Length: 335
Image (cartoon, rainbow, N blue to C red; front, side, top):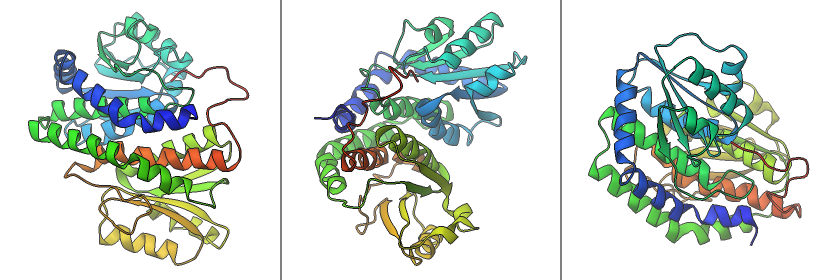
C-alpha cells in the first residue's frame, strides 16, 4: 500500500492515541499550558507548512476566549524578530527541526521569551528551547504530513478547550465516538475517493470559517502528492469575482463544516454554473463524503474531515500514476 494512503487510513487510531496521551500522561503539561495562555497578555501561534494550518482551528477556538491571539508564519517572525517579552509563543512542529522553526526557537530562548512547543520530537531544538512541551506521541508519517496534521490539530484544540473551560467529559466522549466512526467509515471513504474518475488535475478548494483550515491543507496535500496546482478561497470571496471561471472545465471541492441556509445558498449559486464538484458537508446525505457532526464544535469537525480531503489528494496522484509521497526534489521535509 502507498505510504500516504496508509497514513491516511491510520488516522483514527492515531487520534485515539494522541487523545489518550494528552488527557493521561500529558494532562499536567496541558493544564500548565492552559494556565500560561490565560495569564498571557498576547499569544502568538506560529509554524510552517502543514503545521501552520494545524494551528488554524486552535486560533479559531482560542480567539473566542482570549482578547489577543495571532497566527503568523514563522518565516515572517524570523525576518523581524519581535522584542515584546510579554507575549507567549506557541510553536507547532512534528520534527522541531524545520529551519525557520528551529532558528526562531533559538531567538526566543536567547530572549527568555515564554514558549510552548507542540511536537512529536522531545529531543528536538524546538523542544529544548521551550519552557513547556506538549508531546504528540504518534509515530511519524511518511513524507507527507498526514497523521501529524490531525493529531497536532487535536492537541491544539484540547489546549483551547482547557484554556476556555470547555474540556469536559462530554467533549471527550464525543471525540472518542468520532474517532470510532472514522475507523468504521474509512474504507467507505477510500472507495468513494477511488471511484471519482475525473480527479488528476488542478482543483479549487472552497469553504468558510474554520473550514478554511482544510482548503489550505487540501491544496498543500494535492500539490505535494499529485504535483498539480490548487487554489483556495472562502466561498463568499469566490462569489465576488472568481466564480467567473466556473464552466464545464472547472473542478472544485466544497467543504462545509457548519452548513446553514446561507452556506447552502452560496454553494448552490456556484454549482449552478456547471463544472465538477466534490461535496464534503456535515450531516448531509447528499454529500460525496458525508461527515457527521457528533455534536462537536465546528473547529473539532476539522479532524474527521481531514481524511476525505487527503484521500482526494491521494486519488489525484494515483490517477496520474504518481507514487504519492515519493518526492523528486526533496530528501526530507520537516514541519
